[in-house]
Length: 445
Image (tube, helix red, strand yellow):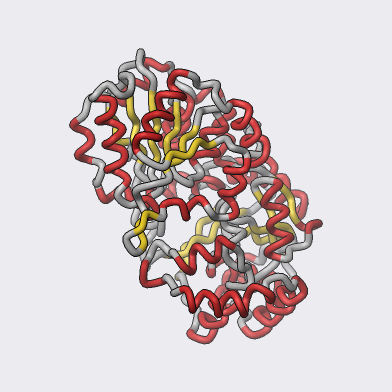
């Protein structure tokens, strides 16, 4: 995700144009794997060097400390992850959660305590395992692309110890309300204004250190030159260009078994409960290797959009190429409707003013009860729901009815979608990467 957003999104291209800058990209080896040749070749520049580092693990004491302080951000999102984690073995019971709440709920509201904890963290766990790289390159600035990563935290601490300026940002818009960040950088970049408020409220980061830059992965959407003629796009997907396109997006481990719901949509079309249409099914990148959507390919005008590049080098098992990114943007541009779960796809759809339906049933069961509704209760997704831009479907009948409604009247909830766009997408002007690069240059030049 970071490789897509930062390296391919435009930040690296902008910075590397200045030949007075020397750029060192540090990448942790995941499970000891070497970086693919295509990756190293793609980002090769005269003034760019890529170093692969051993992904050194925390010691037992530091792991315990990290777990203890992580709950200093204690919100309803925290509750969902503690009580109803996607991995059953990581869930805690109601009584256990009560004691967590009793201890952490009051502590999480004390901002100066978070400052003290960060000071103690830095004092006792200085993160000096990567010191040799600072000796080797003597940087003027360290830019961390994922403030939650233990790899980044160790590097940020080493930079701080050497009085090197630091910039960091969350990997995604849903990271601020879950866990406490162990270090405060000199400059913190966020994707939208809501996140700036969250960073101050939950992470106790000084508002003067926070800059809103937008979503660099949305920059592509502002480039009209990437969009194919519709006939060419439909030919690639074996679609009928005269029919509407329904984009259906999975949420991976959070929506396991969703292929059954997706097939119900196809069957409704076959039984003429829906008009004839093209159906694009987008597996979540983390689950694409499972091939659980393969049986749906037997239906006409159905395309399983899992051809994006996979890679075992990355934890999330994918590494989308620039062509993959353009293809995804074309799918958003040409679809008539987005059907998904509590997913960032809602923001992607809002960038193109596409109707959005959220599936709220059938994929998450706890003690025999359907609790799919839980994924909509995180703080960051409550922002989406507050705009009323997403129509929620709580059973198959509602889902089919809402699809029919939007295919007949795509302008329905257009005002609400504009509100979603305004509140959460920031500026889809093609310049988010420029703002990130500008923030970096403002410190070192």
